[in-house]
Length: 121
Image (tube, rainbow, N blue to C red; front, side):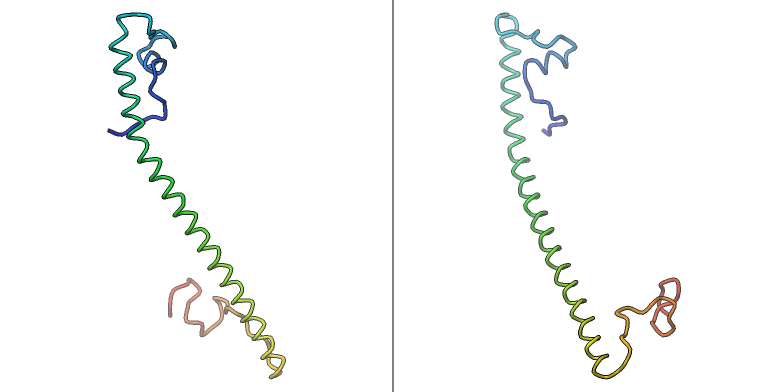
């Protein structure tokens, strides 16, 4: 049994669902005793079903946060390595007198292994 709505099961929710006013199911009315008991049982069952779903969602949220942290750390390392590569190429250029080579070749440069449309030659 899956819950299809986020509405808490209660006497008021049931009365509104039945097209009645909020508060129309009263404990003081003897005819409502069995209905109130069934509503209480349904509310307990609903909470028991929701509990594992909440625990599962918390586990998924923690996992997603862990992946997000790992991704940010990986991106940080990559940026750091690209900067280091650029600095080393600049040092080589200063020491050898060569021009600095770009980190990436443009798509339009011949011999880069790709055509202008991004496909391999």
